Length: 322
Image (cartoon, rainbow, N blue to C red):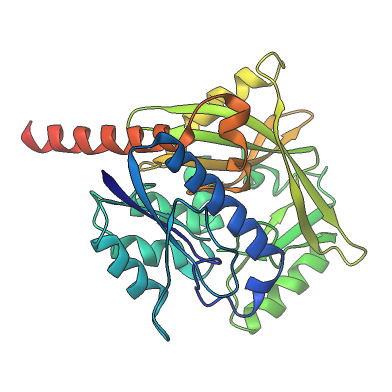
């Protein structure tokens, strides 16, 4: 049977600066467990799962593996990936973690996006530049718009709503950006797009992206403007909705604009009342929307992700022999 190693960074023992004991760990475990459940349901894989003392035990039929004392995430992933046929890594782009783990796994074993796509998606600025160059609406299109009265400042490589603050007025946002820059932080400042916060869940192969579902994001800004992520309502916009066709077309555009998107990918966007979908960022990995999605859609997304991997490997081999 094929051996698969599943590594989710928070529950797998990566150094998280003390954040692992909170909500982030719970979200990480939920994504880990959803992927593992799908793999086990296929009954054709031996599944090993990275875990640590802070994390809950994985599914009984999965084999838990833990890092050695003091072992780095990169060394642990490299060691385990070499002992398995496939490796499925779930990690945030923050501090370049996902990009740093990619070279630890041989391409033939890596389930997920190519390094080139991860590197683009790791940077908010690079992502929006690539999308805008492809004619996709982004916040960059609103920088000189008189209708914008709120601006957002956030880490260029941040995940979710981490360290994200919404300001009334451009001057306040610039002041926030300058403080972060003086502290050595690489932050971006963008117009805040008013509208319905949505996310897309895609399954990406080498030639096309399939829109699996459209989700509703639950975001909250406190009195000081600090943004927090309150969860996601999966499959909130049905295919019969008038917006669905435009969002399916957008998924194909994003797939073309960022080569190397593979497997499960998320897109965060806002549906603007006048312009329609405005893309905020691309997540080159499993997101919270994966949890429960296989059951909702009546299809095993792990099987789809592995099929995408196999097609990409076959296409690459055919290209080399052409």
